Length: 225
Image 1: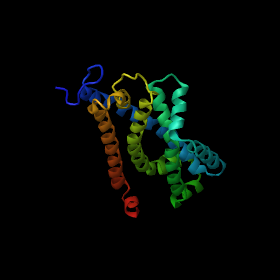
Image 2: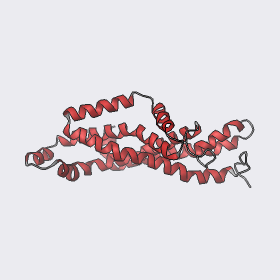
Image 3: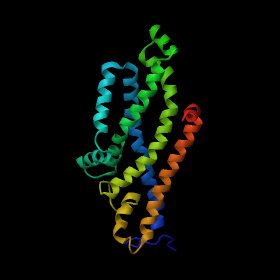
Image 4: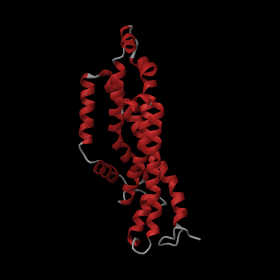
């Protein structure tokens, strides 16, 4: 039995939705890995040193944020041959300023604490202060932001795939499946309902996970909010 019907090629929709979870989740997770690797160090350096470095970094991020995220993703993805790698890089670049700003704000507050000032006064190196005093305090906010961002990244990856910027358009990926289903909505609503529901539930799940992690790892921030 085909619980969600079949597509135009008589392939079972439910099976493709389940199979598509692997590609969608992988693309969403890898899209968040890039801003973690780039945005976190950038924000940490800008927040710790301040001055000209901070100004240049933040102004560059302001310029990036002034463009619509979809436009940036389209430009990056269109600059390369359509592939899932291009989509992952495009979505990842969108999130770099978000991670950098979050980390910068956290580092700014930590760098002014007495024990950090004392370490600097005693000649501790930036690397020592970063790894021993700043990095442990960054774990919670970065984990929370990453869990929230995975859901958003999955939605953005699906959106680019729907627009035809992804890799193989016949691949079992939720956005690509929605693109294939758009010509059949009036005749077979189940065709679009499957991947659409999968995207919605997955995004909701990651946002709930992020909220739960925020409550568990940052109770003071939750109480003040």
